[in-house]
Image 1 (spheres, helix red, strand yellow):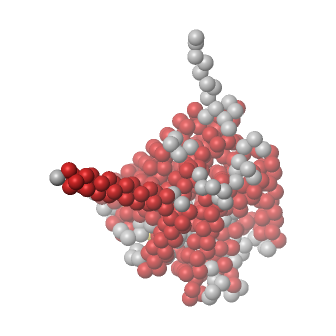
Image 2 (cartoon, helix red, strand yellow):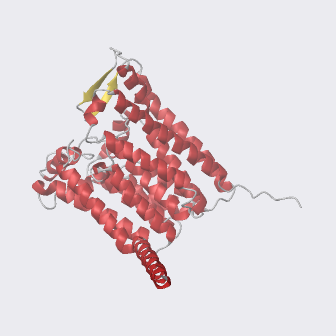
Image 3 (cartoon, one colour):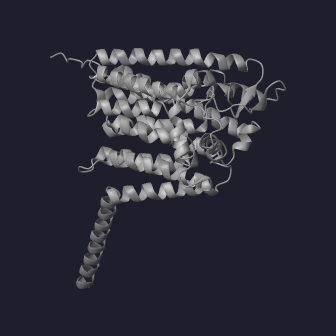
Length: 429
């Protein structure tokens, strides 16, 4: 009897040790580079498949708009941003044209390959070549998860070109500010939003004069080349083009009019603008709201600048200030925006990844909020976007929730920037 009990105890002990060893092996695998690269590859393959074969035409802009622009330029017809004003800065044309490398019939696949390669470069820089730290591992897994919940829009727009450039630029901010300035400036001349990260870097960096000099010199060079190519005033035509947009249905401000449609208002409708290829609100006050977004954005940016300068004067170090300041700038561009396209959610990746690299515990809240924004965005677009176009109450509610999440992130970032550099309290003996 005693021998049987001893055998049972030994057996249970062996099983427990085997379980512990297995759990340890799983943890070691998940904490290693192989698992991270496996997750990265699986997510990108899934996103590529969704873009190519998923419902809702997730690659519609790429294949129906970008490809036409690129083909027209190659055929000597119209060069967007040079011969005519364009909604994007001039460098956006580079990846659009590069996607023609394997021919027009392979345009979609080539585009997705370009974006995936850029993501892989940024991912490798995030992981680094030294021993993989816990914070970088957390940031890398978060990015993989963020891409997964965001869905095909993560790869299927021009914004997808700028996100890995922005991530890399922010990661280089502490050690190589001039390289960071080059990358972020190039990103801004592809899609404007990384200019906000340049502003954050100027405020947070100790070597801000170098950052300003590099960004200004590179911008002047890009403008000069554009003018020599014949762009003239079209080189900055994207500013005017953006200013002329109406209130797009995904914009946070548009939810007020969408709820009016839900309530049965007959004088508020959703219309398609064929000039800029977007669905917009048409109704009393919508044009005024669209016009107010620009001054609202200016005020929001000014407030964040003041908060950031205050933190810099209080000697906040770059690791404490740059991530929340960048997040604040990015979220203001999203909240006070008349456009509000679903791909704007991709912008959140760059500041959140930087925040997780420096302070993962502190950045847990905005990381969770950004993940929720990505999930809501994925639910709405591209699969069931048609429900939003008819102002279905459930989808208008989801859009309202998304706006609330963005506002929560903005409040968090303002608080974090305000607290940055705060003098330590001296306790009384």
